[in-house]
Image 1 (cartoon, rainbow, N blue to C red):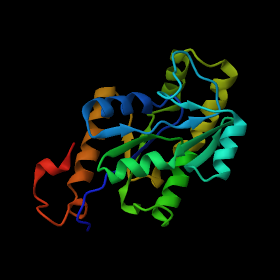
Image 2 (cartoon, rainbow, N blue to C red; image 1 turned 45 degrees about the vertical axis):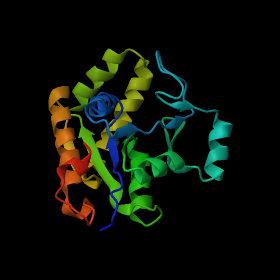
Image 3 (cartoon, rainbow, N blue to C red; image 1 turned 180 degrees about the horizontal axis):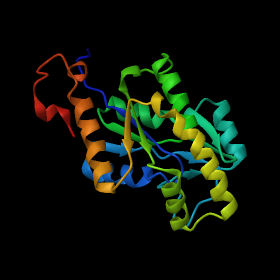
Length: 215
């Protein structure tokens, strides 16, 4: 146990259209100590997305340059595009005692789990992983079609990928079966509170001080 509290890395994964972006936004609105890690991607912006807020949009050449420079904590390809998590930002936030929220695809989350828990990161105990499980593929398809951002062919591809991704739920610390957003948020909030109350995460001096938990 350390003398100084470091933050958590809270990873939320779900198949495309599974509701993870909505859950992450509710969690960010709830906790002033929670900051969002903006991922990098080579895919094109969707309607209303802003560079630096939703994603950092990069060319494929620039993304691959950053891979070679080891600037990503993890990176993966999904549906033909790169996605990656910048390492320096997360390290800086954890040192400051802030919690970092990551909206990460299943492949990237697997890399994070392997790398962080395998000793390739300075804070191996910081990781908390949550899988947001759609109740059915039919409901997931309804959600994807309601977004009205993808063609029928793209939706079919996303559903085929999602069916495979849903099998990885056992690799995560927690599973939330997605229903109403309020219920998903209540469970996500409960997970974060429980993790921050774990005795192993308390500083050596005055571990009982509730105000030190910084929800």
